[in-house]
Amino acid sequence: MYRIEDGDALLVVDPQNDFLPGGSLAVPDGNRIFEPINRLMPLFRYVAASRDWHPHEHAFFQAYGGPWPFHCLAGTPGAQFSPLLHAGEIDEIVSKGTDPNTDGYSAFAGTSLPDRLHAHGIRRLFIAGIATDYCVKCTALDARAAGFDVVVISDAIAAINANPGDEERAIAEMRACGAEFVDSHHVIAGV
Ligand code: VGL
Ligand code: ZN
Image (cartoon, rainbow, N blue to C red; front, side, top):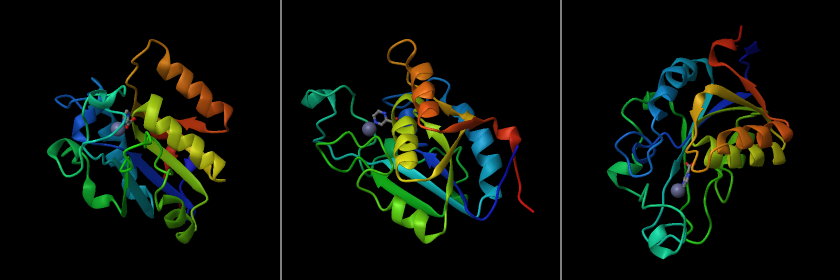
């Protein structure tokens, strides 16, 4: 059991339309993250959400030799948060992937997130969202490197799995860096 205290924050990684059924880089079972996320958000004093927010000319798009179809173009419907997310619970939105030459997977890379977390006295970061094998993984590893305790909500993440086993490898990498995993039902309100 994890009891939520003042130094805890929840980070919801990229809960955006393009990563969900109907989107351009859809994770087929992505919508199942929203029930646990919506249930957990009210337990936290501080909730942040990242969003992939790419310029059209981004080196990681296939059109420019990268691995990905166009997705999460800044300001477009595909970049909006899913209507399934209780967005009113979000205290801080962090845009990432805005630099055309870097992958932008991590919510810590070139963003104000570490400063915002420190300003709020956050020591432990609970992480949920999409995709387990890219943005969730890179964010969890960077959070550990920045000195935060990290707990990943195991039923509130979903993987792209472009190659079989990507999800398992990502989880193993996160564990190796000291991230812990918990089912959302074992995260409970503080006193
Ligand atoms: C992501 C691939 C490309 C993610 C973002 O949110 O995990 N994956 N851009
Ligand atoms: Zn992206």
